[in-house]
Length: 499
Image 1: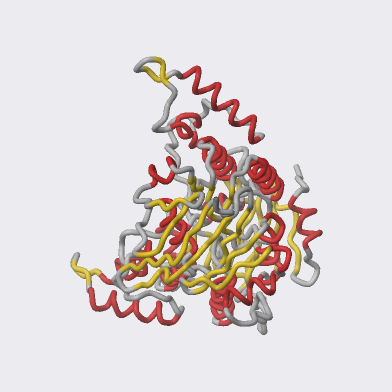
Image 2: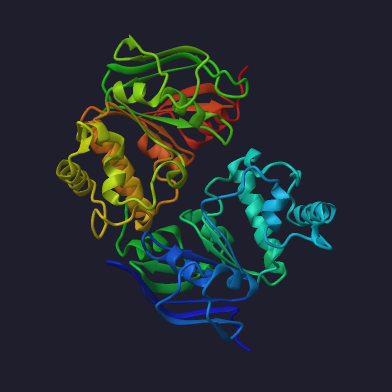
């Protein structure tokens, strides 16, 4: 009998123009948490998709409990005891939570679905993992963090031998993350192995037993987590020393106010209320706060995606009405949205189309697109931002998260904005790609652009922002200068609701 519940040996997988995996191996012990780390594009998700049957490996061998298996689809993987919690959630939003969990395996009485039994099974499952959610509420009414916890409960319901968790804490608070860790420990106690993909080094060292590191589609090595440090993991990931997480900032913002928001209120009582702030030329103004602080709702309202009940938005000393995205774009605003895959990229379209899509009118004359000009602009901006892609014709979905994010930044730079609103600009991308995004941001403010940056990562706010505006439950609770800000002062303001 093998000492490993899962063995993947010499796995290779290629796509047109890209060798995604080359001779990669992974061995996981039962009842262990095995972290899988690497930069975006290292091949982590591709390897897991080969295990879960989303992709079919080109070569190599997979063994479960010492027995060789061929996995060609996800149902087969589930039947073999392998579950996967994806980074991006795609629930059936108008159906109850319980139906999302038991889809394809509804309990039945005769030929009819046994709703009562389904409710009971869901409640028992939620009790096991410590979730307090009504099984009958529509999935679409849940917050992203609760949806993530429901996905984890769903994976647990299969009584799997192996559960793959791809960035499971990307939308969770610290308390919810600790709850997740409790669930993981319960799974371990029942002999379930967890493959844990994350870019958060502190989490990896806290929860993992072993760590496998990948780089450029290849296996680097496996170490006991107790023998690793954050610096050592980063060094192995990027293949070089990374002495600073943030590039040096050698310019200061100007005095000129380019954007002023005065007493902005949402028509929804639980959303942002009475928000006022100023943004200066060449400044990065960070917006911090916990889940539910209404930061995303605020910046989407400034960009014309949400209604405004009262208040003023003033650009270059002139008040303007934000009724639509076109209004915002016309006044030199651009928005990089929080959820890259849901509201940013067009996965099946090419890199070229994704790059120029916000600026199509510039390339159209009498209803005919100038393809040569589109291609030229896309080529120039992707080269400028160092986007790694086989060609501009590559489908966007095949790029790594960091390269997708750079394409989206390039998309908005082609509209020539004065102000960029970046909502979680480095969510779900690795430390090397983050550094490149930070360099792009600093280059933009050097050129006189201004940036509003929403971020849930405290080090990012402290490392990149000139000032930090903190929100709690829709209200601004304080604005801190770079020199006076620290984690304690930000957290105090983030939990300090002012009526």
